[in-house]
Length: 289
Image (cartoon, rainbow, N blue to C red; front, side, top):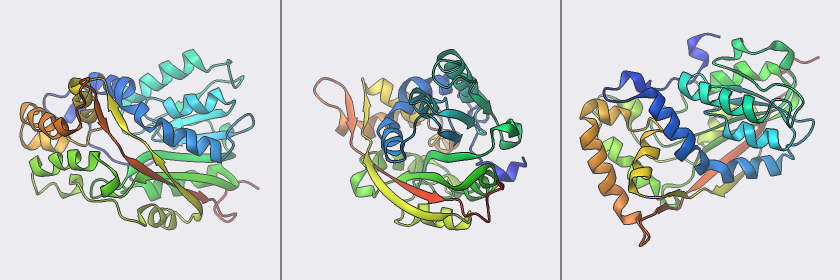
Protein backbone atom coordinates (compact mmCIF):
# COMPACT_ATOMS: atom_id res chain seq x y z
CA UNK A 1 0.00 0.00 0.00
CA UNK A 2 1.47 3.36 -0.97
CA UNK A 3 1.89 6.22 1.54
CA UNK A 4 -0.85 8.20 -0.24
CA UNK A 5 -3.37 5.57 0.81
CA UNK A 6 -2.95 6.04 4.55
CA UNK A 7 -3.94 8.96 6.71
CA UNK A 8 -0.87 10.94 7.52
CA UNK A 9 -0.34 12.24 11.07
CA UNK A 10 2.65 13.85 12.76
CA UNK A 11 4.77 11.19 14.44
CA UNK A 12 5.18 11.75 18.17
CA UNK A 13 8.84 10.81 17.84
CA UNK A 14 9.31 13.75 15.47
CA UNK A 15 8.11 16.20 18.14
CA UNK A 16 10.79 17.29 20.65
CA UNK A 17 10.14 16.12 24.18
CA UNK A 18 7.54 13.51 23.17
CA UNK A 19 8.01 9.83 24.03
CA UNK A 20 5.99 7.84 21.44
CA UNK A 21 5.62 4.79 23.71
CA UNK A 22 4.39 6.84 26.67
CA UNK A 23 2.06 8.75 24.35
CA UNK A 24 0.57 5.50 23.05
CA UNK A 25 0.05 4.21 26.61
CA UNK A 26 -1.73 7.43 27.55
CA UNK A 27 -3.97 7.01 24.52
CA UNK A 28 -4.76 3.40 25.43
CA UNK A 29 -5.24 3.95 29.17
CA UNK A 30 -6.90 7.39 29.20
CA UNK A 31 -8.18 8.79 25.91
CA UNK A 32 -9.37 5.93 23.75
CA UNK A 33 -12.28 5.07 26.05
CA UNK A 34 -13.86 8.50 25.53
CA UNK A 35 -15.43 7.24 22.30
CA UNK A 36 -16.91 4.05 23.78
CA UNK A 37 -20.49 5.42 23.48
CA UNK A 38 -19.85 5.97 19.76
CA UNK A 39 -18.53 2.43 19.29
CA UNK A 40 -21.48 0.97 21.18
CA UNK A 41 -24.05 3.00 19.22
CA UNK A 42 -22.63 1.87 15.88
CA UNK A 43 -22.31 -1.75 16.95
CA UNK A 44 -25.92 -1.74 18.20
CA UNK A 45 -27.30 -0.07 15.10
CA UNK A 46 -25.52 -2.46 12.73
CA UNK A 47 -26.15 -5.57 14.85
CA UNK A 48 -22.49 -6.46 15.19
CA UNK A 49 -22.23 -10.03 16.42
CA UNK A 50 -21.41 -13.59 15.36
CA UNK A 51 -20.95 -13.66 11.61
CA UNK A 52 -19.84 -10.03 11.36
CA UNK A 53 -16.56 -9.61 9.52
CA UNK A 54 -15.18 -6.24 10.57
CA UNK A 55 -12.26 -4.20 9.25
CA UNK A 56 -11.18 -1.30 11.47
CA UNK A 57 -9.20 1.47 9.75
CA UNK A 58 -7.08 3.55 12.13
CA UNK A 59 -7.82 1.07 14.91
CA UNK A 60 -5.60 2.77 17.51
CA UNK A 61 -4.80 0.44 20.39
CA UNK A 62 -7.73 -1.80 19.53
CA UNK A 63 -10.53 -0.94 21.98
CA UNK A 64 -13.30 -0.73 19.36
CA UNK A 65 -12.12 -4.02 17.86
CA UNK A 66 -12.11 -5.65 21.28
CA UNK A 67 -15.69 -4.51 21.85
CA UNK A 68 -16.74 -5.97 18.49
CA UNK A 69 -14.95 -9.24 19.24
CA UNK A 70 -16.77 -9.50 22.58
CA UNK A 71 -19.98 -9.58 20.52
CA UNK A 72 -18.64 -12.46 18.45
CA UNK A 73 -17.35 -10.57 15.41
CA UNK A 74 -14.30 -11.61 13.42
CA UNK A 75 -11.96 -8.63 13.54
CA UNK A 76 -9.18 -7.16 11.44
CA UNK A 77 -7.45 -3.83 12.10
CA UNK A 78 -5.14 -1.38 10.37
CA UNK A 79 -3.16 1.25 12.29
CA UNK A 80 -0.88 3.17 9.89
CA UNK A 81 0.03 6.21 11.97
CA UNK A 82 1.46 4.79 15.21
CA UNK A 83 3.56 1.62 15.50
CA UNK A 84 3.34 2.01 19.27
CA UNK A 85 -0.48 1.94 19.27
CA UNK A 86 -0.39 -1.03 16.89
CA UNK A 87 1.86 -2.92 19.31
CA UNK A 88 -0.54 -2.23 22.17
CA UNK A 89 -3.47 -3.37 20.02
CA UNK A 90 -1.70 -6.62 19.21
CA UNK A 91 -0.94 -7.26 22.88
CA UNK A 92 -4.50 -6.45 23.95
CA UNK A 93 -6.29 -8.40 21.24
CA UNK A 94 -4.06 -11.44 21.11
CA UNK A 95 -4.28 -11.90 24.87
CA UNK A 96 -8.02 -11.26 25.21
CA UNK A 97 -9.56 -12.25 21.89
CA UNK A 98 -7.66 -15.12 20.29
CA UNK A 99 -9.92 -18.12 20.38
CA UNK A 100 -12.04 -16.67 23.20
CA UNK A 101 -14.81 -14.99 21.21
CA UNK A 102 -14.25 -15.55 17.52
CA UNK A 103 -12.46 -18.88 17.34
CA UNK A 104 -9.73 -17.27 15.27
CA UNK A 105 -6.87 -14.81 15.65
CA UNK A 106 -7.32 -11.08 15.42
CA UNK A 107 -5.45 -9.89 12.33
CA UNK A 108 -3.65 -6.54 12.59
CA UNK A 109 -1.29 -4.63 10.32
CA UNK A 110 0.13 -1.21 9.56
CA UNK A 111 -1.41 -1.11 6.06
CA UNK A 112 -4.05 -2.85 4.00
CA UNK A 113 -1.30 -4.53 2.03
CA UNK A 114 -0.01 -6.18 5.20
CA UNK A 115 -3.30 -7.98 5.83
CA UNK A 116 -4.17 -11.56 5.01
CA UNK A 117 -6.17 -11.45 1.76
CA UNK A 118 -8.15 -14.45 2.99
CA UNK A 119 -9.88 -12.01 5.32
CA UNK A 120 -11.53 -10.17 2.39
CA UNK A 121 -15.31 -10.01 2.20
CA UNK A 122 -15.85 -7.65 5.16
CA UNK A 123 -19.44 -6.66 5.80
CA UNK A 124 -18.45 -3.74 8.05
CA UNK A 125 -15.61 -1.25 7.69
CA UNK A 126 -15.10 1.37 10.40
CA UNK A 127 -13.04 4.57 10.42
CA UNK A 128 -13.73 5.75 13.98
CA UNK A 129 -10.99 8.39 14.23
CA UNK A 130 -13.09 11.59 14.22
CA UNK A 131 -12.53 14.23 11.58
CA UNK A 132 -13.64 17.84 11.68
CA UNK A 133 -11.44 19.50 14.30
CA UNK A 134 -8.43 20.61 12.27
CA UNK A 135 -7.84 21.64 8.68
CA UNK A 136 -6.79 18.71 6.53
CA UNK A 137 -7.66 16.01 9.05
CA UNK A 138 -9.63 14.09 6.40
CA UNK A 139 -6.74 14.16 3.92
CA UNK A 140 -6.04 10.63 2.76
CA UNK A 141 -9.19 9.17 4.33
CA UNK A 142 -11.14 9.02 1.07
CA UNK A 143 -8.22 7.29 -0.63
CA UNK A 144 -7.94 4.81 2.24
CA UNK A 145 -11.66 4.03 2.05
CA UNK A 146 -11.41 3.62 -1.72
CA UNK A 147 -8.54 1.18 -1.25
CA UNK A 148 -10.47 -0.75 1.40
CA UNK A 149 -13.73 -1.02 -0.56
CA UNK A 150 -12.61 -3.83 -2.89
CA UNK A 151 -11.99 -5.95 0.21
CA UNK A 152 -15.61 -5.51 1.32
CA UNK A 153 -18.71 -7.47 0.37
CA UNK A 154 -21.40 -5.98 -1.83
CA UNK A 155 -23.48 -3.49 0.13
CA UNK A 156 -21.12 -3.59 3.11
CA UNK A 157 -21.53 -0.82 5.65
CA UNK A 158 -18.74 1.74 6.02
CA UNK A 159 -18.81 3.95 9.11
CA UNK A 160 -17.11 7.35 9.34
CA UNK A 161 -16.99 9.49 12.48
CA UNK A 162 -16.66 13.23 13.07
CA UNK A 163 -16.89 15.92 15.71
CA UNK A 164 -20.30 17.43 16.27
CA UNK A 165 -21.23 21.13 16.15
CA UNK A 166 -18.74 23.28 18.11
CA UNK A 167 -21.50 24.67 20.31
CA UNK A 168 -22.20 21.12 21.53
CA UNK A 169 -18.57 20.13 22.05
CA UNK A 170 -16.95 21.63 25.14
CA UNK A 171 -13.58 20.26 24.08
CA UNK A 172 -13.64 22.51 21.02
CA UNK A 173 -12.50 25.50 23.08
CA UNK A 174 -9.67 23.49 24.60
CA UNK A 175 -8.47 22.31 21.20
CA UNK A 176 -8.18 25.93 20.08
CA UNK A 177 -5.20 26.23 22.43
CA UNK A 178 -3.29 24.22 19.86
CA UNK A 179 -4.34 26.64 17.12
CA UNK A 180 -3.31 29.65 19.16
CA UNK A 181 0.15 28.32 19.92
CA UNK A 182 1.00 26.60 16.64
CA UNK A 183 2.99 28.36 13.95
CA UNK A 184 0.42 29.82 11.49
CA UNK A 185 2.50 28.44 8.63
CA UNK A 186 1.48 24.93 9.70
CA UNK A 187 -2.00 25.34 8.28
CA UNK A 188 -2.61 21.61 7.89
CA UNK A 189 -2.61 21.17 11.65
CA UNK A 190 -4.80 24.14 12.63
CA UNK A 191 -8.15 23.88 14.34
CA UNK A 192 -11.34 24.51 12.39
CA UNK A 193 -15.01 23.97 13.29
CA UNK A 194 -16.72 20.81 12.12
CA UNK A 195 -18.90 21.34 9.06
CA UNK A 196 -22.29 19.76 8.57
CA UNK A 197 -21.37 17.73 5.48
CA UNK A 198 -17.77 16.76 6.34
CA UNK A 199 -18.54 13.04 6.46
CA UNK A 200 -20.76 13.05 3.39
CA UNK A 201 -18.06 14.77 1.36
CA UNK A 202 -15.48 12.15 2.31
CA UNK A 203 -17.92 9.35 1.48
CA UNK A 204 -18.67 10.92 -1.90
CA UNK A 205 -14.97 11.20 -2.74
CA UNK A 206 -14.57 7.51 -1.88
CA UNK A 207 -17.48 6.52 -4.12
CA UNK A 208 -19.65 5.39 -1.19
CA UNK A 209 -23.42 5.77 -0.88
CA UNK A 210 -24.70 7.44 2.35
CA UNK A 211 -27.26 5.30 4.13
CA UNK A 212 -28.03 6.93 7.47
CA UNK A 213 -26.35 8.83 10.26
CA UNK A 214 -26.58 9.51 13.96
CA UNK A 215 -25.27 11.57 16.85
CA UNK A 216 -23.87 10.26 20.10
CA UNK A 217 -22.98 12.02 23.36
CA UNK A 218 -19.34 11.27 24.18
CA UNK A 219 -18.33 13.28 27.26
CA UNK A 220 -14.62 13.48 27.98
CA UNK A 221 -14.21 12.64 31.66
CA UNK A 222 -10.90 12.47 33.51
CA UNK A 223 -9.92 11.58 37.06
CA UNK A 224 -7.97 14.81 37.49
CA UNK A 225 -6.26 17.64 35.61
CA UNK A 226 -3.06 15.65 35.06
CA UNK A 227 -5.00 12.83 33.41
CA UNK A 228 -6.87 15.30 31.22
CA UNK A 229 -3.64 16.86 29.99
CA UNK A 230 -2.03 13.49 29.29
CA UNK A 231 -5.12 12.21 27.52
CA UNK A 232 -5.53 15.23 25.27
CA UNK A 233 -1.83 15.37 24.42
CA UNK A 234 -1.98 11.69 23.43
CA UNK A 235 -4.28 12.59 20.51
CA UNK A 236 -1.41 14.29 18.68
CA UNK A 237 -3.57 17.37 18.09
CA UNK A 238 -1.17 19.52 20.12
CA UNK A 239 2.07 18.38 18.48
CA UNK A 240 2.26 21.35 16.11
CA UNK A 241 1.91 23.66 19.12
CA UNK A 242 4.68 21.80 20.99
CA UNK A 243 6.88 22.10 17.90
CA UNK A 244 6.21 25.84 17.62
CA UNK A 245 6.70 26.59 21.34
CA UNK A 246 7.65 23.90 23.85
CA UNK A 247 5.99 21.20 25.92
CA UNK A 248 5.97 23.30 29.12
CA UNK A 249 4.10 26.20 27.54
CA UNK A 250 1.53 23.92 25.91
CA UNK A 251 1.03 22.11 29.20
CA UNK A 252 0.52 25.38 31.09
CA UNK A 253 -1.99 26.81 28.63
CA UNK A 254 -3.84 23.52 28.29
CA UNK A 255 -4.28 23.33 32.07
CA UNK A 256 -5.64 26.87 32.10
CA UNK A 257 -8.12 26.06 29.32
CA UNK A 258 -9.31 23.00 31.26
CA UNK A 259 -9.96 24.79 34.54
CA UNK A 260 -13.59 25.77 33.74
CA UNK A 261 -14.36 22.06 33.38
CA UNK A 262 -12.96 20.99 36.77
CA UNK A 263 -15.55 19.87 39.27
CA UNK A 264 -15.47 20.05 43.06
CA UNK A 265 -14.15 16.49 43.31
CA UNK A 266 -11.21 17.54 41.07
CA UNK A 267 -12.44 15.49 38.10
CA UNK A 268 -12.58 17.10 34.65
CA UNK A 269 -15.80 16.78 32.63
CA UNK A 270 -16.44 18.08 29.11
CA UNK A 271 -19.69 17.19 27.32
CA UNK A 272 -19.28 16.51 23.60
CA UNK A 273 -21.38 15.21 20.72
CA UNK A 274 -19.96 13.14 17.90
CA UNK A 275 -21.59 12.29 14.60
CA UNK A 276 -21.32 9.11 12.56
CA UNK A 277 -22.26 8.37 8.95
CA UNK A 278 -23.17 4.94 7.61
CA UNK A 279 -22.34 4.53 3.92
CA UNK A 280 -22.55 1.54 1.63
CA UNK A 281 -20.13 -0.01 -0.82
CA UNK A 282 -21.76 -0.02 -4.28
CA UNK A 283 -21.53 -3.26 -6.21
CA UNK A 284 -19.27 -1.68 -8.78
CA UNK A 285 -16.62 -0.95 -6.10
CA UNK A 286 -16.66 -4.32 -4.43
CA UNK A 287 -14.05 -6.85 -5.41
CA UNK A 288 -16.34 -9.72 -4.47
CA UNK A 289 -18.03 -11.78 -7.22
